[in-house]
Image (tube, rainbow over all chains, first blue to last red; front, top):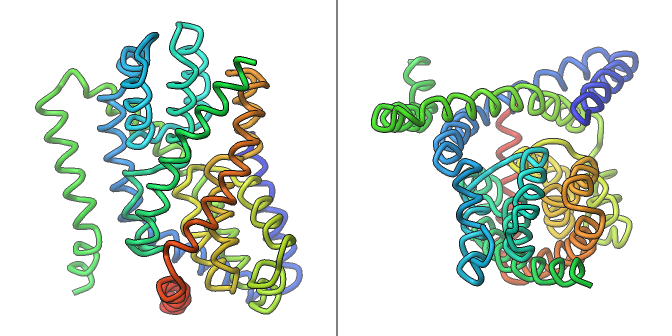
Amino acid sequence: MDTLILYFAVLVLFGFSLLKDRNKTILALKKGLKALEGIMPQFITVLLFIAVILSIFDSQFITKLLGAKTGWVGVIVASALGSVTLIPGFVAFPLAGELMRNGAGGLQITTFVSSLMMVGIVTLPMEISVFGRRAAILRNVFALVFSFIAAFFVAWVVQL
Amino acid sequence: MKKIKILKRYGITLAALAALIAFVLVYPDRAPLVGASLLSQVTTMLLVVPPIFLLLGLLDVWVPREQMMKYMGEGSGLKGVLIAFSLGSAAAGPLYGAFPVASVLMKKGASFMNILIFIGAWSTTKIPMLLFEMKALGYRFALARLAIDIVGIVIIAMALKAAIGKKEIDRILVTAGESRKDNR
C-alpha cells in the first residue's frame, strides 16, 4: 500500500517537473539512477548476507529463543537477534504478535522489535560510508541501549 | 579497463555471493529458506528502492540549498525538527534506504541534528508500520512504543551530536557534499 503511494508520488512529481523544465527533469532522472547504481555493490552484498542470516534465524528458531520464561537471558538474546536480523515490519509485527500469544515475554518481544528497527549490524558498512565509522557505530550503540529502555517502558504500559 | 573497474567495485559483492553459495553447499537443507528470503528481499528492493532514488534526484535538482538550510538547517529550530520527523515517518522501506537520503539532505544544508532525527524517525515511527503494529500487537503496545520512541529519537540525536563532536560532524558534512559532487 505505501509502495503504491510512493509510485504515485514519483509519477505526480515527475509530471510536474516535466511540465516546468524538461532538462532539469532529465538531470534529476540521471542523478537518481546514477546514485542508485552507486549504492548497488553494498546493497546486493547486504541482501546476500540477510538471506543467509534469515535462513539460520527463521521464525521457528526465534520462537524457541524468545519463548516464555527466558528472563534476562531472553532479553539479551532478543536484542542480539534484533540487531543482526533485518526483517521488514509487515513480517516482524505479526511474528511478534504470534510470539506474544504463544507466551513469550512482553519485555523480550519489545526489545526484539525495537532493536530490529533501530540497530543494523548488517547494514553498518552502508551507514559508515555516509556517516563515518565513529558516528555510525555510536548511533547503533545508543540505539541498542535505548531499545532496552523502550522495552521496559512498553512492557510496563501494557501491564497497566 | 572499465571492466576491471566494475569488477573491483563489485568485489565485495562477489565475495558475499561466494560465501552464500558455500553456505548453501554445506547446509543444503537451508537452501529453500535462503532462496525464499533472497526472492522476497529482491522484490522489496526492486519495488521500493528505485522510486526513493528517483525522488532524491528531483530533490537534488529542484530544492535549492538556501531553501533547505532555511527549513532544516542550523537555526531552523522546532520547525526543522518537525520536518525531519515528518519526512522520516512518511518514508517507505527499510532503514538502509534512509542513508542515501540523509546524504543528500546533508549536502543540501540540513543540520546534523535534524539528520539524526530523520534517521531515527525513518527507523521507528513510520506511519504505515504503526498501523501494522497496532493490528498485530494491540494499540496499547504500539502507542506506548511510539511515545517512548519519539522521546528516544530526540535524546539519541542530542547525545550523538555531543558524543561525536563538532570536528567530526563538520568532516561528515563536508564528505557528504563532496561525494555528491563527484556524481555530476
